[in-house]
Image (tube, rainbow, N blue to C red; front, side, top):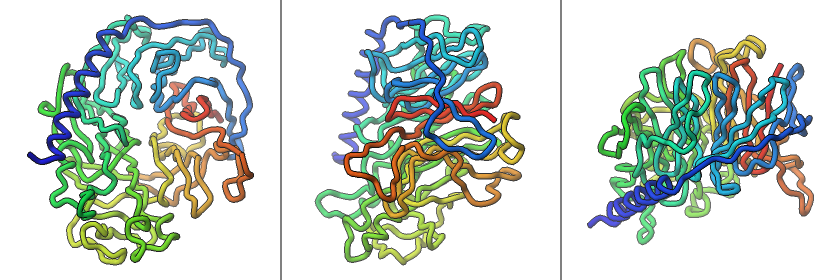
Length: 424
């Protein structure tokens, strides 16, 4: 039997059993009255914007969402006090969080309040809570499993998701293997059988319960690990930010310099149609050459372009920035130039550029990028990345993005455990 296929089948079985057992024992939510001081922050934003820290010491908060009533939900990658989802509520609407609830014991990344449900993901599936007419969870102890049994190999295993206007559910299933490299031959497997169950985005029905791989379709493939994923209702299409592979110079020092190893491959921003192929693991995108290059595992040398046709990104960024979320701004609070543009949360840094840990903005016009990306919210790290002092540690890492009903932008930080609110 194919080793990768056997490993996949075993991991699917384990994921299903773990997901089911966790929900059998998942009981109750904790609630406490709080009065979190609204703090000015070390973050920097363009003139005319205000940045406030509205939550702190919240744990590894990954993606977040804001319900129509203003309630803020964030999903944790690691349990804190035994809980994974946190709810922050400003009951008297004075701009200060005064109620905090924690519930669910299934760590994960994705979360979305949409219509009458709060959807959230574990590392192997997606589940939901029913909301009432006031957009509040009816029963914290009752969940509905939408899909489970998705592969979880422990690395790049988050299951971020998006839902379109027809209630189609799009779930990222990232690859745990960086380049589909055979450990014995160190060559790329051909074909890469990981693509049967990972390295892409799968489509399910958000209204159907208890789905597995068999109920879904592979919407897009060759996407290594799209941690940022969103449905754009203006263009009626799916957008995703993909984490590129690494190790070009580490595995192929004769082909790539240390500088090239730090600069390549690109992190990529895609608009994806059904059956699109992003080219992983056979190729990678080079933003410096502005073309798709054949991967060294498949006979590439850093110069040879791919002869096969794959979808190109709408924008590419330096290596290792780690684009962890993407949001199209549709509010009226920010200046007009931000309308329908994309915010991207970069969770890591480029050691070559000495930049990272920031939220970028990409201007859009008529559904396409209209100009270069720019840094919108900076200094999450709290240190000088060009000349860090010995013993100096990071303060924050941006991870998730959400827009409130009033047009405010929210950013989660899974390192320092903060949530920031940006207004203008």
